[in-house]
Length: 437
Image (cartoon, helix red, strand yellow):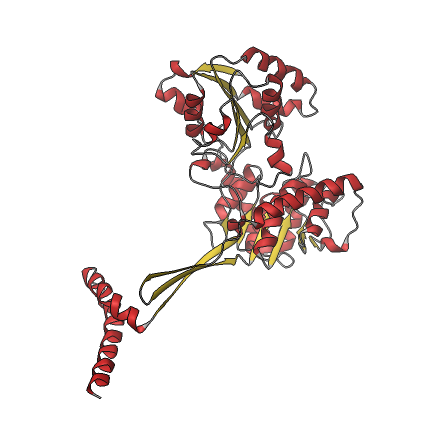
């Protein structure tokens, strides 16, 4: 990992450090478009053919009901999943938004109500490791929100099966449609709908550059589908000072680096920190990891930044806008109050990012690639849309109508003005008639 000193950097240097590894989306879009077109035109047949090409298997029934399957997980694994589900459920249930009602002025009542997005698609990456945690993070808020149709898609193994842990989560959260396909073809199947895959209105979940490209392309297509957020490779930024345990810091950096060779793990330390001890720990822990090849390549693209103090470290963090931010300093709570841009924050020495990845309760589907500047992570609200309503009484129209007439005339929209004026005239006529009687 390269080491930089903050005070010696120019604005251009800092800007460059905030850049992520470049993704060649132009090339990826060119590879993904034929898959999207094929699935749109040929449905299940195309999904099977592309899955055969990329995953080496063409599943018999593409879509299964997980409740029909028996899972053979140990009691210990089931208990761990159940406990994580409970915590995630509790945290997301508290995000339910009550309807609001405001009388903005006498006789004018405005409301906002939440409704579930009726059809959602959840993408669970596969490949190098099963990800039941992502199934929990997406399936639980969909359940709480009340989404009527939920499709879970994940790439199958060489036998055409999905991990039993993912199937178990699908059973626990009541998902009835599991698509045994991954990649751009699975995203397309959910976006357009096929003979066996229900069409969805919104797509969720992380994935490789082809999955990300498919989501981005489809939200701008005639599929009429939205997405949770654009996303790139996983990343973490750790802020540490001289009080941080080097062993802890190294383990937190590696926990993200092992995701893949395109991940980033950034350490921002204060000048009195023991950087050499962290580097030693990184080497020792890396050598013991089964996924050390991925982690080592990720570390090659990562770096250490030495700052004058923790406030300066936080200043840089807000510029970088990390997916995961770990604050391991003596003033961690104070620094947490200064966070402006981050997907999820982990405060203090006893809060590794792994806890949020699995079981503390917060969601781990988060904005990457700097998108934390303008996107939130997945929450219950991600599975809802909000509708405004209003009801105006006669008194309210008499009170506010003239204001609207003036504004409509100002904009030259006579039909808008007439919709109010005609009503005011009728009310005026009735008032006059009533007074004459």
